[in-house]
Amino acid sequence: MNLRALTKGDAAVAGAAVLLFIASFLPYWTVDCKGKYCGDTSTNAWDSVLFPVLPSVFLLGILAAALILVQRFQGQAAANRQILGLRLDQWGIAFSVAALWAALWSLGGGLKGIDHGIGAWLAVIALIVLAGAAAGGQLIPVLKTPLVTDRPAAPAAFQPGGYPAPGQPGQPGPQGHYGYPAPGQPGGYGYPAAGQPGAQAPGQPQDVAAQQAAAAQAAEAEAARQAAAQQAAQPQPAPAADFAPFWFAVPAPRQLAPKDGPAGAPVGELVPGTWYLAVEQRGTALVAQLQDGTQGVLADTSGIQRG
Image (cartoon, rainbow, N blue to C red):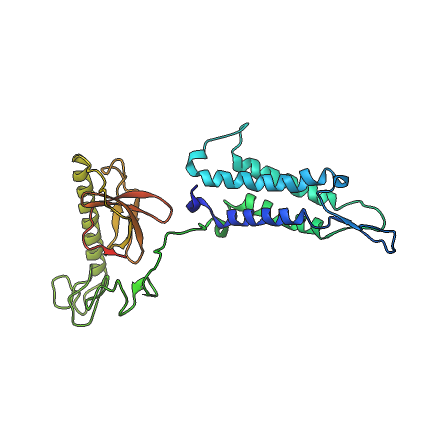
């Protein structure tokens, strides 16, 4: 079960299914009858007199939500798995639209003195949300955002931008934050101190400094690629038996190599100011996991900050 594969659209689908289930127990029909001989003046969808409202509206809508969520939980393993030419989530979208169609038709007709109850109207609202979230889950940006993201269990206090607040655990010390040296201290990562080689003198053109920064980043990326290639040529060490996953941050952008072939194209990039989870150790390298669940090998672990 991969919770990271769920999106806000999937949460809306699940909530609509719960609302639809609750609506099935609420009055679907209400009878306008007064007097001691009227008896029960309301009935819900589970009453056999309303057949086939229960299977065509309520049970079909709940089944649609279940198919969509099962497809999401299986993730990429079920991307090409089909039943009669359609994936499970595609069947779920079709069932949700069919249930909404049946619910709208069930609001028509009726007899004098018999009105639709709160269960009928609540079912229509739940099915509108269900069909909309199911059909637009991969089209509307806000519904495509992940529902669960990787964050440290007990992070330190951070200032805006992801940098530790003064006096909190994880603060780099008197030298300041990553890339931001304190006054009077040597320069941080990628930021040379005043008077040092590479420091920008007053009046120096801005494009020269930008070119120097781009060249430094390119050189670091090339060094990381060469380190990954050298590691791939050597036998991969077995994972440490006493290794425990931990959170860490990098001082500069670094590439993630594929787990099975470190010499291949990078599968992602680690950037400063973001916490990543180390799930495995291979010698001096770490297997890191991104927010979307992607895992890769971080060959250069120098200067990382453990959470």
